[in-house]
Length: 215
Image (cartoon, rainbow, N blue to C red; front, top):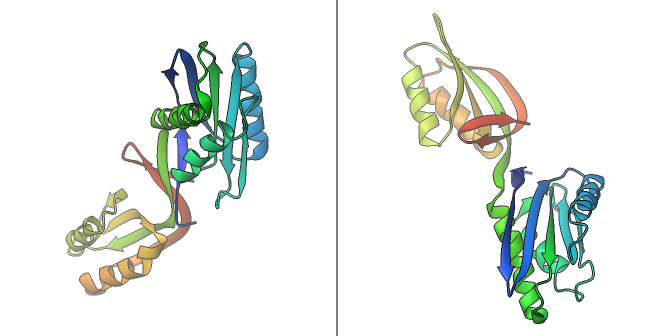
């Protein structure tokens, strides 16, 4: 993994197609068991619905994929739902689309479009973040070097996540794996060797509403 999209907060939204209601509920899941428990819970919540179709993707490489038409014509619900999750490259996610039949048949193409669009609006109602593999890097320098370090970090779109100013300056930043070596070389050269790297901790991280989140 270098960077993957995950659901930080699930969401819910719905569409209406020829009087049929399609309610999409999205949740983050870490295992097949969690996904199945979520699907069971949705079936209990919407026990009187015509269908509760589902799809989920679990694993760093999306290796576990399952879907269910739940009584809809084969291939018209679960697979299109799964295709949206895979197309959006979201990992560790489950979605249930609940249908209340409105009295008008939609046909095969209509069902595929309705279930696909339902998942899209469900994902849009969720908070999706990018989880990055990288390093929590601590940098120590004197006051002469701080300006150059701030410039180099800003140039690469990297955020200072913590700082301490005493007789020296200590900064922390989160660096994507592929940028680490080049960044350290640039800082060493830019400060004429006045910077020291006091901690390099392998982490996965993301930013949620501008705030760092370490996994």
